[in-house]
Length: 334
Image (cartoon, rainbow, N blue to C red; front, top):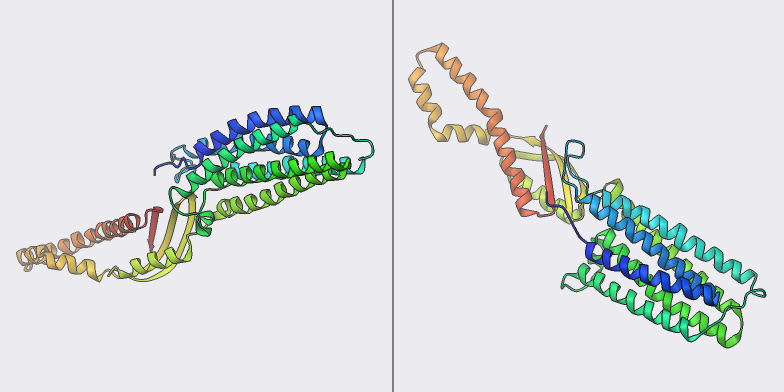
């Protein structure tokens, strides 16, 4: 199975951009003491760490199948995406909200400054994170219109970059307003509230990503429409009378493994042997010799498992050819 590299370009771009932005925001925080700037610096730092984890997940998911993992390592990307989402929740949201609440409770002691440097840095961050967001959206859409279905089927790694960059752009906007209000009114409550709001956005973002990755890790099945189509195609085969059991699970982005148990009818295969004419020729040659006839029956019986196996292989290949998202098919006869 071909390994997936969805999201790698966007992750690398976001990682480089956030590393640069983190350094800038941290420097401004130390100069201004702003709670909202601390929230933004923490936000970008968390994004940098998280995107490093996403890159690890993408790299490890590309490992080919082996004796230990017969269906490959595609699930690795979901595991590392989940760790990344937890990082957003605890590092990004947790520390940001804690620091902002602390600033709010001690606002009489805090006197954050607001300068042209803050504006320049935040605008630069807005431009960088906006550019990486646009790149990730382009990779997600692949020239198509963005829709709800596109987001539902999206790679959690790529979705993480989009959500993180989207939250970053929104966070920069909030930080600008918060710092400006504090500068105009002289009240730290606006700056601290901005930090809390950024933290809450990160928390919501983390929960969404955790749920998304959880679905894949516990075994995300095919959607119902595709499942019905596959079952319908299976029932078209003359040897399959009934589909007794059907299971599917994602093994990578857009790649699934299906397992099905079917009620088998071997008559069409016997008809194939009969219509080929070989059996009649052999029978006519030994019909007066019972021992040779018995041997013919044994040889014929020995053909059946191979015929069944070959036919199942053909059915599986048809499914894989018709449904490109199916990587492996296992059909078991009841």
